[in-house]
Structures are given as structure tokens and as C-alpha cells.
Length: 275
Image 1 (cartoon, rainbow, N blue to C red):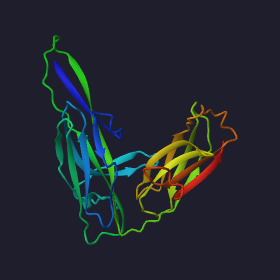
Image 2: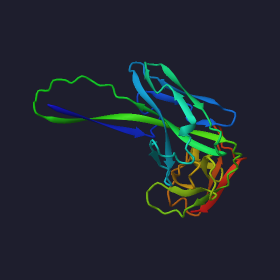
Image 3: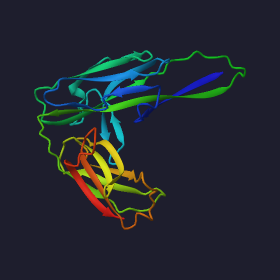
Image 4: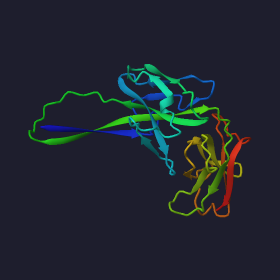
């Protein structure tokens, strides 16, 4: 009996998706005064232990909002906005007992020659599968495949060095086209050409005073010129259809990030469209 175990990584999933693992905070920011940051990895499972590997890498943000990891290669220069060479961290691996946690410390070390600007990296926690003993099979000479999903959680790290960022952001709404039953709005958030600043904000969609959609903590990385976003429109008061939205005005706001209510006093970009 031959057995093949196929391992694959599921990235970008919610923190509660696997084994009760939680990460705090979900975003790390180093300004000129910050030297050390901490990220807590917590196993809230009451029974199962989890083994995790910790790594820091650079990811490129694609126009559709997805990310491509750019591995470090010895002898090759990192991307200009990579924070990987600027960071040290410990531990590199941890075994989390049930309902226990581990603090990962991240240390910022800047070389004297570093240019002012914003730099980015991602810290990733990848579960290391624990091997299970083989069991006897009644049928011999058979071949089976066991799929073992391995979750990997990543959060961004931003290093801001002597950069008084005041990025100019614009928002463009694309003409709505009925391609699905659920009404939606597609739009593009852009920075000025050549702007290498990091931008983070909240996206909210409004019809008069009613909010129809919300994304908190959406960001553009230093090397990202624009990101295209599509959001479904939902109302707590009624079912929205393409038909009953005809003639209605929809406003999209990109506001400074807030953990509480939408910060309408600090609007980074806005646009309105009529259905």
C-alpha cells in the first residue's frame, strides 16, 4: 500500500478558519520612534496543539488586490521598498499548547544609508503538519491520496522612515454592468504617479445616509499605483435589486482608517455615480 500526502497552503483566510488560531494585531507599523513590535499568536483550541513556523517575506500587491510573494534570493537585491532586510524576529517556530500563546518580537534595524520612504514586508505563520502513524489497510497494492490543508496567515509590516506621507489618492467608479443577480459597485483607488507612500483606509458605500458596504483597513503598498475593487451592495432594510436601484445615486468613500465609526471628517477620496 502506497500513501501520498499532498500538502498545500491556504493563505488569506480568516483567523478563525482553522483550529481556533488567533493573531493580534493584524497590522504592524514602525514609525521613526518605534524600534520593537510584538505579534501574539494564540491557540484557543481546548484540546489540540499546533506547531507553527514563522517567516518574513516580501509580497507584491497586484492590481486585482491579490498578492504575489517574491522570495529572497541570496546574491540578489531585494525590491526597493522591501522591509525584509530591515527586520529581525524571534522565535522562528513555536509549538502552541491548547489555550496557550506565543509572542513573536520584531526588531527594526536600519542601515545608515537607507533612503526616506515606506517599506513593506509580511510576517507569515504557517502550520507545520504533525505526522500521523500509518494504519494497516485491508487492501494491498493500492494507492491513495490524503489531502492535508495547511493554513498560513500573513499580516503586513510597514516601516516608515523619515517620510511625512501625505499621499494624494483618487477614486474612479466604473460604469455598473449587470453581470450577476446581486448589485455591486466596481471602482479603482489610485495614488499619484511616482508616489511610493503606504496608504491605509476604510471603504464605505452609501445611498443617502444608509451604508450599503464596508471594508476596513484596505491599503495600497508603496509600489502599488492602483487597486481595483468590487463590492456587493446590501441593505439591512430591504432587498436590493438592479431594478430598484435605477436612478439612485451611490457614493463611495475612502476615509482615513478607524477602528470605530467611519471617519467622514478625513476623506481621502470620494466619487458618486447614478445607477
